[in-house]
Image 1 (tube, rainbow over the protein chains, first blue to last red):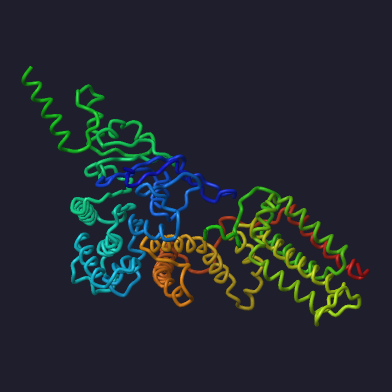
Image 2: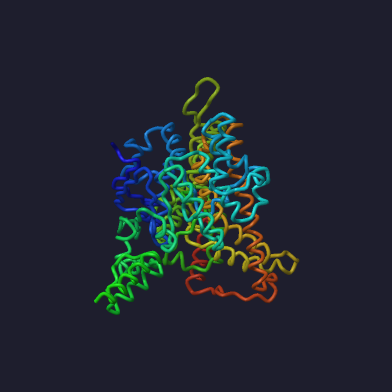
Length: 288
Length: 268
C-alpha cells in the first residue's frame, strides 16, 4: 500500500529567472505514515515553511512530486480542494487569519467550505473547540475579544474542524508565554492520541519537540539532513550545533559529561532517560 | 504570484545610473518626459530613443525586466494606437471599407503615439528600477524644499510617501500569507460569479485591515519612542551631495532638450 504522504525529489525555486532567484528546497524526499507525530526542525530560512506549503498544494513544486495516498495532489481543482481539507495546515501566528463575527462562525469557515450540512458543521465546531480546550462559552464572542492564547486556539480549531488526516502546525507556540505554550502542546498531544491522525509539527525549539515526536526531520539549507527517531537524531550533538540548532539542555549536559569521561550513553534527550542512565552508572559502581 | 508585481520595484546595482544623485535622476526624468513630448519628427524620436537605450544599457537593467514592466499598460497602448488609427483624418488614403478610413498619416500618428507611451513608461521605470524608494523620497523632499516657504508640509508629505512605499511589499506579503491561510481552510478566490468573488474577499480583507491598523499603530509608537517630532531640526544619515557626474548628466540633459527644440524648429 502506498504511504499516506510521500514526497519525491521536491525542489522549489522562488522567483526563478529574476535577480531574486532563491532555491528554497532541493531534492527533498519524505514519507509520512498514519499515526506518526513528526517534528520538523530547522533554522529560520532552512526551507521548512516552504516545505509544508507543498503538502496541501498551496505551492507548486518547481520539480518533484507530492503524493497523498499515492495520488498526485495537483491533478485537478477537485483534487486540490480535497487535499486541502485532508491536509490541515496551521500557519505561523494563525490568529491573524480570524475574521468572522463570532468564534463559532470562524471555526465553521473550513467545514462550510467543504459544503457540509448544518448539524455536521455544528458538531465539528464543538468537537474542535473541545480539542483545543476552548470554553464553549467563548464560541459566541467576537474572536477579537479573546486573549492572545485563546485566539491561537480558536485559529487552530478552525483547521481541526475540517477533520484532516494530517494536521500540520507551523510553530504553533511562537510568541506565547510558557503556560500558553504548555497548554497548546498538551492539547495537540491529546488530539493526536485521540484521533490517531498524523501530526507534523514545525519548530526550531528542540526542547519542546524532543519530548513528544515519534520521529524528527532536520532541515538545513533546503535539504533534509537527518531523519529518524529522536534518540538517533540527538546522538549527533555536534552536527546539530554546527547547523545552528540548540539541542535540549539535558542532551548537552550528557554530552559534556561524556566528554569528561563519564560513560553515559549517547542520544539522551529527556530528564528521565538521563536519570536512568546516571542511576544505572551509580548502581554499576556499587556492584563493582 | 503577488510577489511578481514589478511596478516600482528597485533592483540594486552599482552602475553610473545607480550612483547618480536621486535629485539628478528625478530632474533628468522630468527633462526626458518634456523632451519626449516636444519630439516631433523621426530624427528627434531617434535621438530620444538612443538616449533611453544608452541609459538602460549603462544601468545594466535587463531588457526583459523593462519589457515585463511594460506589460500592464499593453492594453492602454493598443487602445491609443487603434483610436489614432481610426480617427486621424489624413490626405493619403490607404484603405477604405464600410465606414472606416485608414490613412498614412493615421498609421504614422498611431505608431508615434504608441512609441511615445512605451518610451515614457520605459524611462520612468528606469528611475524606479535604479533608485531605492528611500533615495527617491529623499531626493523629492530636497527638490521640493523651497515650497516650505509657502507652508507646504514637504517633510511630512515625503515621510508619508516613504512609509507608504515601504509598506507596499509588507502588505503584499501579508496578503499572500492570509490568502494562503484561508486557502488552507478551503477558500477559493478565483471561482464563482462576481457576488461570490466579492464575498470570498471578506476573509482576506478583514484580517488585512486589522493588521494594517495594528502596524500603523505600532509604527507610530516606535517613531514616537525614538523622539520623532516632524522635520524640524532633523538631520540626515546620508546627506545627498551633487558630484561631478551629476552635473555632467544634467548638462547632457539640457543639451538633449536644446537639440530636440532645434530639431523641432527644423521640422525634423
